[in-house]
Amino acid sequence: MTENIYDDRDFFAAYEQLGRSMRGLDGAPEWSSVRALLPELVAARVVDLGCGFGAFARWAVSAGATDVLALDGSARMLERAQASTDAPGVRYELVDLNELVLPPAAFDLAYSALVLHYIADLSRFAQAVHDALRPGGRLVLTTEHPVFMASTRSDFVDIEGVWAWPVDHYADEGERTTNSLVPSVRKWFRSTGTIVNTLIDAGFVIHRLIDWTPTAEQVAATPALEEERDRPAFLLIAADSALR
Amino acid sequence: MTENIYDDRDFFAAYEQLGRSMRGLDGAPEWSSVRALLPELVAARVVDLGCGFGAFARWAVSAGATDVLALDGSARMLERAQASTDAPGVRYELVDLNELVLPPAAFDLAYSALVLHYIADLSRFAQAVHDALRPGGRLVLTTEHPVFMASTRSDFVDIEGVWAWPVDHYADEGERTTNSLVPSVRKWFRSTGTIVNTLIDAGFVIHRLIDWTPTAEQVAATPALEEERDRPAFLLIAADSALR
Image (cartoon, rainbow over all chains, first blue to last red; front, top):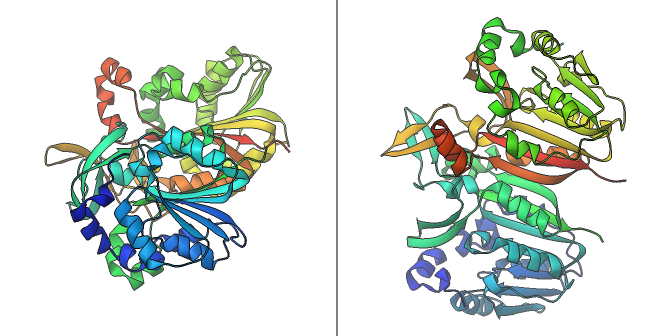
């Protein structure tokens, strides 16, 4: 089993304090955009790849899903998720997503939020997810945006009075070690093109691609979000398993 | 007819001196990546949307295309294109691409290099191109990359010893006035997601998406290309008209 950063005590303690951890789906400013990519969930079979505290799994059940398989690579996360819910229809399982094996054509929706950048072999992951969806089933994923991840320096700079996000080393795909809540977190950087093409090669048809930035209304309600309009922090993709 | 920047004498004079203008397709470092997206051209009917000096139109004929409709919005460009070729099978036409009208299902390939950022109404353009392709026909396009275009400042900066490209105002889609060869060139900025989704909405299936950066080999051969590995300058997309 791959070592999981969420099992690191310091990382977990910091992660627990994030708005998106404390306030669930509504604590994530991209959630309304993500939700718009989801298919009808009544009677749906869902697999949540990297379920975290289980907020999406519980929401999916409330939206009508009858069977939600919620997977995570962190025992600490799953413990917390299980303590937070007794929603019928949700099954939690400890799974290394780098070694994902799922039953064929068993799901209507695969959901994966902010996990892709921890996956070492994206081709393997995309194929496993594709084959687990029924023909016409949908994958909805979010990931740290390549523009956000590429940079050596993960911080805005003031350049002659303009607040800007410096991008460098975009061509150098592969491992990135960043300070993200704690020092030296290992992630995998890939360009938007590589992510899209890997999904297409696995048999997906791209349905939607969103370089997520907050709306002007969101910034008005939460001024701290303003800098998020300068560069996309998240990439959202909806892709369908082709009807065969 | 929309005013065309290529009819501006100073812009045209500067454009003529670019490597990609003087040396044709091989003067463009992204050309080998673009070529890999093209379908078989033997007996193909091709429309070139923004043909410039006609380098691609001539190449398409040499690759076997039997009919190439080469369109451009600049009379000055077309004059030069026509003077450069007597390739049989190429027809040049002065057309405002913002008001593009084409015969239905008449082409196997639509090609558009570095023109999209001058198109005001992308939905209209995408639909016109889609409907002009036969079912299963392909669109191959290149455009200035959104990461390149978004920035208020179009130049690298040295940030504590790291050469980086500052990105800002990515969320603000729409008109951008930039200094590009000459001052105050008007372009239209859209995110990668918006470009992709507009193509999908017009009926295209995304086949390939490339955030173009040069290879290490290209940089070894042309050291001036090195900074191009820090951020993608071009977005390349291949998309197919769905088989109906």
